[in-house]
Length: 427
Ligand code: GN1
Ligand code: MG
Image (cartoon, rainbow, N blue to C red; front, side):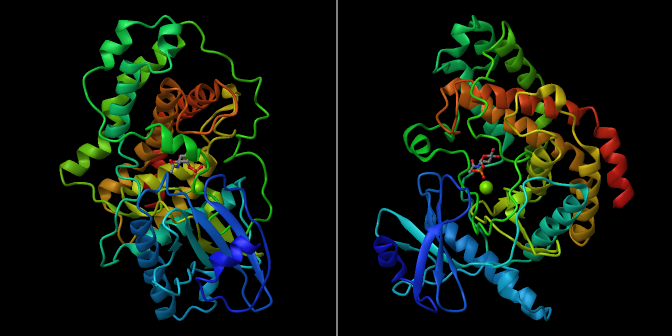
């Protein structure tokens, strides 16, 4: 408590602190609830600057985004604005929305009371999630300032492809060698260099890349196990080792579809696909609902940055349309859920009608395939590099995740025509 009071004294809280307790289930940013004897309670959070290396840029993004949304809500005459957009307190000395002693970075936001998050999604909540994330993008579509990329090229598939090829060529953990995969896969993959190391060792490992930015607000209530979160260690025996030929066949399958999956970058280069301000971590549990089930507020803003709208559309469905958790070994249960797709698409198209271009709209089925694929490539790259980025609970965890995401991707790919029909229906 003393330690926290020392940090909190750099911010002007209304009311005296009566308790500081852990909040939410974030494993990267340390998140605490600060109870006061005043009207507001607060969320105190230590920002993980091993993953988010430029905290100043990150908080500037968040200030611009929350400020812009707040002004829009006020202009529209909405009440209860402090429950509809996060509010960060300025540091008393610097005026910035964080305080640092040069080593750790801390921020304080107003705690939103009586709010609920969900991990398990129904079609009804997916519709609201589509509306909510679409509305978030719509409100930010005319933000005048330029935001920075808090993790550069975060959702750039070409970069992820290069990282995979590099991992195959280096075979750092010797997993390909152990599986008897020699020159072929490595040759197939060789050549290019990676400009950015997601699996860059030390810092990322220290920081346990998995679960890095969750529970921004952490007004946690009904947390149901299942869809979005699974890495709880109970699967320790479930990690079946690589089967003969499996690693080689994963590498070839990924490489075979790589060009097709890099469509977004090509469209962007051709000037046909803009970058917009996106959330880039659109899991359903990053949205707060009120007691009646209405959307209150989007949280977990660390990855808000310029990206393709595919990021928000695709990453939500990656977690929500998967009937099992992303690290479940029960791949036979994986069937991309079209009921979730349909209701999410309906909500999303409704709230983005004012700015989405035909190219963006027509390629939403591609986005639904891209994100399981990109995630599979990222998990597999980490597996080959010896598990330096994503937290693992057992040695084959990243391989299990890869199998899972590839199964989801295959299922999504087989439903593209059906997805396109749904998009046309709601567009
Ligand atoms: C990480 O930390 P969390 O769980 O919100 C990752 C996402 C991945 C996700 C996969 C900064 O998100 O991109 O989709 O794991 N975030 C970062 O579970 O790498
Ligand atoms: Mg998160």
